[in-house]
Length: 195
Image 1: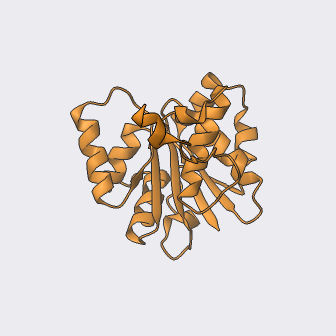
Image 2: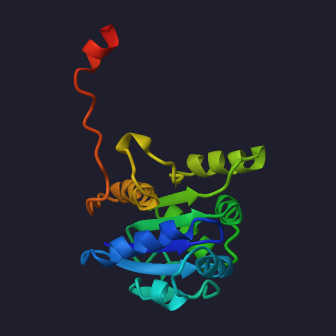
């Protein structure tokens, strides 16, 4: 399986880094990484990671300005793309097919080839323009998967929250590296409701 991973310039780059860490451990997955300039800045600001160490997690790293990269063509087969975090600027570029960089072009290719495109938008609160873009992206077939905390898993750390969100996105590609604490239902829920 070949996956394109985009890390754009929103807060939450740790989600993209964790995704790369997990995929790096899966032999059956080949990763192609695109980083925006703001993502590179956020890596140094939000984490203790060095840019070179993040890039080393990917099988291939592409310059965001290289519109001639292999992943810019539909003839280069991939299983899809995940952009995490996804900035509103990147979302807008995708919705409006404004492919002036490789991240948006690769997403555009994934959509036109009817492959899976998953966006993990990181912005709050959302104004009507953001909501309109998310709606339009969804109508285009994009899977919108914001990193929302799943509290039913009873997380004990930030890592638990990050791992669950990353695991749920990987579910969308039928990859299960064991990050998700699966919901098993509430025992005796009918009896509890009666009491």
